[in-house]
Length: 68
Image 1: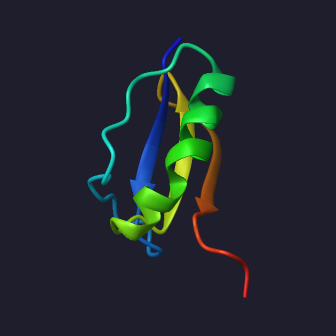
Image 2: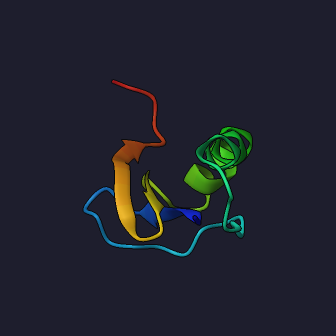
């Protein structure tokens, strides 16, 4: 199993992340990594993320911005 993040603009267009992610062996590891880097990712141009496991969508898109 390989847990991966997709980084997107608010319109769903994929963008290159400001911090290079890795493939994670657990969902918890992927979520912990995002928790550590979400501000850098947002400031680098990503508006939202989506999590997948071996190509199967798990959840997302999830905004990296605070609610209005």
